[in-house]
Length: 119
Image (tube, rainbow, N blue to C red; front, top):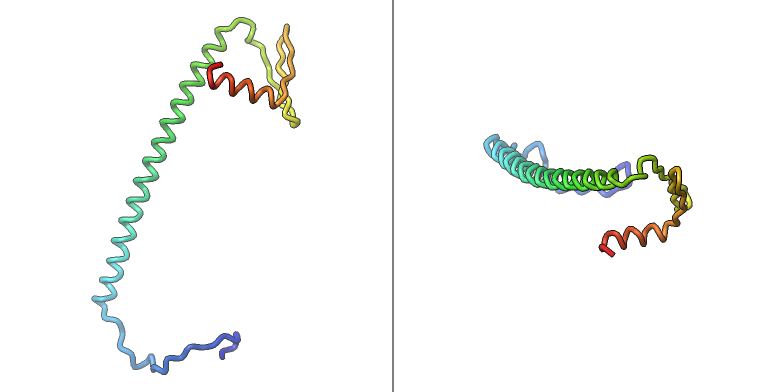
């Protein structure tokens, strides 16, 4: 056992008499490693670029939808000065000059689900 109390595995071979690995073999192993690593990184970067392009397209679609929704909302008279206040309790307060309403989180979620399904 060594000083760390770990068993030392001795093969009984004198490593000073073992011949070195040939340089051609070592270069061949290193070349193979480099080739495989570069192939992996190329494949990985291609997949990442495709996913990034998909996310970019999705973000553009969402931005377009938000712009359309903003245009529709701005065409409704009386919604110019509407403000929303979110409280930690899950209650949303909607106010403007002539209207005020407090909406709970459950009813707000139901309204969003109804809107999303087209009811």
